[in-house]
Image: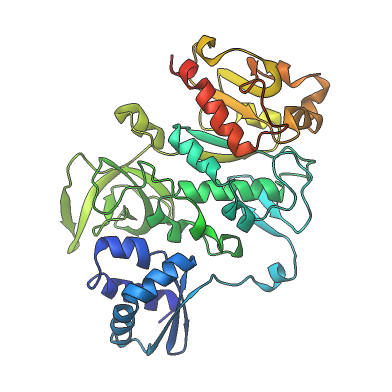
Length: 396
C-alpha cells in the first residue's frame, strides 16, 4: 500500500471513532509520512499539536495500530514535507497560476513598492499582512488583484513578492476541507496554520446545509463526477469534470440523496460561483489573480473589465465620504498603492509614456484619509480605510 492509501484507510477508520467536528477541525488538516512500521502525522502548528496530544492522541494511536496495515508506531509533530534538492540549493521553481501564467520563485530580493524585500511567507503569516483577506471577506470583495509593481522579468514571470501574497490570499479563501486536495505540500505553507480564518459564508461546516457548496472532484464514474463537499456523503455531478478541479455546486435547498452503484450520493450540478451571490445575495468569497501591468489590471479578470475605476493617494481629491457620489456601475475596481504610492507603479509600467500622473488612469482619484497623522499607511490599513470610506457611495 502507498503512503496515501494507508492514510486514507486510517482516516476512514478514524471517522468511526471521532465526531465530524473533530475530524474536520483536527484530523483532516494532518498530513502523513509512512516509514516502515511508523506513521508520522504532521500538524500545521503547535496549537493543533497540543490539542491532539492532550485530547485525541491515545484514540488515534489505538485506532491506527489496530488496523492491520503494518503500523505499530504513531508520531505527532509539527512539520511539512521537505524541499526537493533543487529548492534546497536555492534554485528557482516555476509554479503554475493560470492557463498561461507562471510564477518564478527565487532567492533574489524584491525592490517593488507593495512588499518589503525581507518578507517571506512566515513573516506575512506572523505579521498583519494576512489581514488583507479578512478585510476582503468582511466587506464582500469579489476579486483581489495582486499587482506586480516592481521591475519585470522576461516573459510571463511574476516576482516572488507578488506570488507570496497571492498564495496567502488563495489559501485563506479556500474552504478548509478542500485545502488538502487543492493546495500541495510546500515549505512555503509551514506556518499556514497561524493564518487568521476567514469564516466566510462559503466555508460551510459539516453540520450546516446551504443550497450551494464548494467541492473538489475526486473521481469519475460512468460519465459522472464524484465530488468531496466536506460532508459524510459525496456529491455526484452528471458531467465529467477534470480530476482535482474545484467546483461550485448546487445541491438543493434540502438534502436529498440517491443510491447509485451501491453507494449513497448527494445529487448536484456545477454552477458559476458568481451565480450564488446573484441568486441568493450571499457573499461567496473572492477570486485572486496576479496582474503584471496596468493593462492587465484593467482588462483581465472574471468580469471582462470595469466600468468604474478608483485610484487612492494622499495626493488625490479630498471629499468627505458622506458627500461622495459615484457614477452608476456594475463592476468597480479600487486600486491601492504600496509604500511608494501609485507613482511608483506608473514609473515601472509601459503606459508611463501616455500618462504623466496616476490620476489620469482612473475615473476618480481620491484621498481617503486626509490629514493623516502618520507619514505612511500600511497596505492592510489602507484596504480597510478605503473600503469603509467608499462603502456608502458604492452602495447607492
